Picture (cartoon, rainbow, N blue to C red):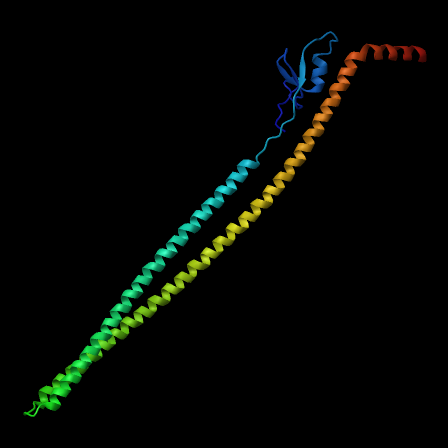
Length: 241
């Protein structure tokens, strides 16, 4: 309840406002202060009020959900950027690998052409020089093949790391989404409970207002018929004596 306390006894909740006295008082203090039958002070009852704290709590929960959704969106954006970055890297590495393979094929074609030229040459051949060139060509080809294989191995390792990282990001995103869904469910339950509590408070307020109305009727009846009731009680006491 949000009603003020009695400004006379400071113990009970004030239910009466006396405009002449400019004071909020409880029913008992009202009887004590205005016990004079000729008292014509104008008094009104104070309606019971409830202090609602549901809206700030709901706002707080909604703010948490907004922050979670914002974090989830940022995570998805980072995932997209990371995926694009590594996809570009993989495309570049693939192009480089293809260029190396193409260069090796060209070298092989040159070697084949060189061998054909040797077969067609009718003059005196320099066997030692030809042997050296073939050995150098073979070494060069082996070196380039080894480099290409190492590049392919690095590319495979990077691809595996990217796949692992993307899988972790996806799992984190799924967990975050599940948390938001659960939080939404909790808020719905909280809202339902809050609405039920508010209904019960409204019913309690109606009961209090009815009680205050009955008290007012009783007080009015007592004010109007007090002297008569006292006279009847006096006669009854005299008869008993």
